[in-house]
Amino acid sequence: MLKYVRHENSRRCLCEHSGSAAIRRPKATRTVASSSVTRFWSPRTNVVEGDNGVSVEVLGRTGIRYTEGERSCFVDSEVLASPAIAVWPSGIRHWDRPHEDDPLTDDDRRRILQNIADAFASQDWGLELIDRSDLG
Image 1: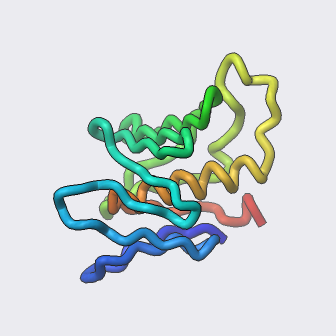
Image 2: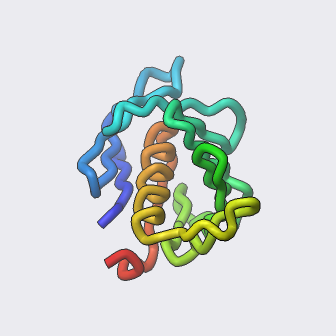
Image 3: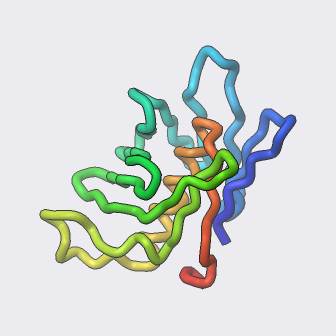
């Protein structure tokens, strides 16, 4: 089960699933190493990029644009009243053009959700996974 937990009054953020942890750096930098030694940074507001070719962009109140390499997809999400964004695994439906014919599997969804969780943790953003039964 993938779950991002932000511990208040703590300098440690934990992404439970792979057991990866992100340590918040001093205020001067926003780059954090995750479990797979991916480094993330924010080139502009609402965008996080990783040295693994992943980009996560919060589009507004109801969507995230996820990109890895040349493929991208829209991820259904919603800004919550608490400082967090809710994401639904079932809201990751298909790759965007020109890769719309590539299958988007449950393993792809797990990887996408883990990359989003790691990117959010690197920026100290809250993330909540809704409807966990989608991924068994």
